[in-house]
Image (tube, rainbow, N blue to C red; front, side):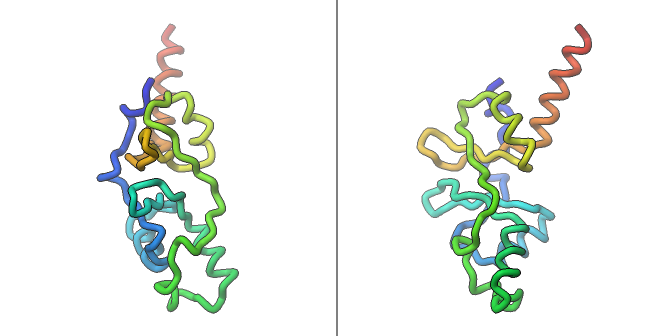
Length: 138
């Protein structure tokens, strides 16, 4: 099954720019209760994913920053420890199952590598469960 059916479009996704600050990321992630947020550059391309862990490691290894100075550090200056790679919109759902075991969502890009949305792990699990249910009935 094509993944387009499961896509949460960009307009409904909480994301940040690599030029956003650590403070903006912390506040947005806290407000929405997310542990990871995609980064989208000014050209609309996927630039990686920032996680709570990335922010915590940056604070740990840069004690001079602290929360009081988090507004001075841009996300492009924070190392990303998880390599969450995007998939193209024309891929099949089966291609995402392995990716979803290690991340909460899979970023989706078009043929021009422009970010168009995400597929959440819960949709992938639901898809797998429905397949399993159908197999059990036969």
